[in-house]
Amino acid sequence: MSFRNVTVAGTGVLGSQIAYQTALNGFKVTAYDLDADAAKKRVLALESSYQHDLHLTAADFQKGLDNLTFTTDLQTAVQDADFVIEALPEELEVKEKFYQQLSKVAPAKAIFASNSSTMIPSQLVKYVDRPAKFLNMHFANMIWLCNVAEIMGTSQTNPAVFQAVVDFAHDIKMVPIAIRKEQPGYVLNSLLIPFVVSAMSLWAKGVADPATVDKDWMISTGAPVGPFAMLDDVGLHTVKNIMLELYQTRHSDLFKQIADKLQPMIDEGKTGVTAGEGFYKYPHPAFRDPEFLKK
Image (tube, rainbow, N blue to C red; front, side, top):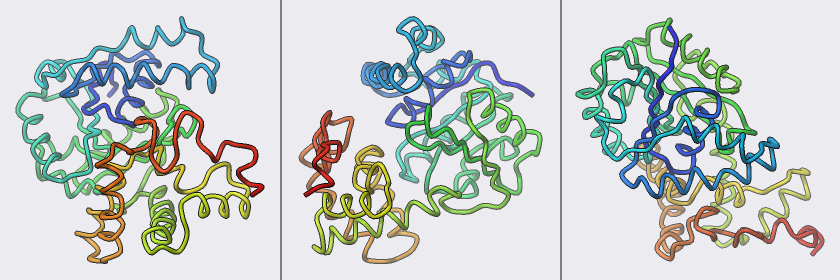
């Protein structure tokens, strides 16, 4: 069981990275998004990172683009798909509607995977018509460097499908992390979410501002960035949605308090790196200043 044609549905921060990384490694990729122009811009914006971090030439980067097409029509996007990776917002209603539509138009051969960072596959499998061919495949941000792919199925997932996705992860230069039991947050976010929630709670409660929290973490641990710089990379829309999902599932007012604290920033368009401003201003954030850790 192998893939040739891959569809990535949703080209936000991670979806655009997944689409390009897959295309760069020789797969024919169709990127499905309601705004194709914005999707193209997000993919093109990756060029400087691939050039700087992986030393790709402009010609090398173009080879990836040559394998990538964009569409706003779901039926067109999946008409010959072997594998569909969903990277839509972390909202259950959005994913439910998408999978119900996808099941109607995708070919029988297609395997479905969700990149959801907060929902386990058994929350979503009820919306698809092929439970044996459904699982989660979660990527970390900046996938060309942080190249893990966490793979988690349900009790209904065909073991051969699971293995095919593990093999695909290798093919796109990811390190597959096989999750043997359903776990909200997988491995990475089981560690990361408590960390960033702790950081945001300090901010939401007025204990310390984001720069102070990041500075303390960076000095004390030697880490290259702090939690609020990480959150800017993820994007504050996604962070807020994760907080609301956690509020619904864990019933702690802290998650709602953090989401409410994020909302004014989002309303002002300060949603993170891709917007040019979040907790920091880009492309020259304060934490990159050599003096940041000295004051």
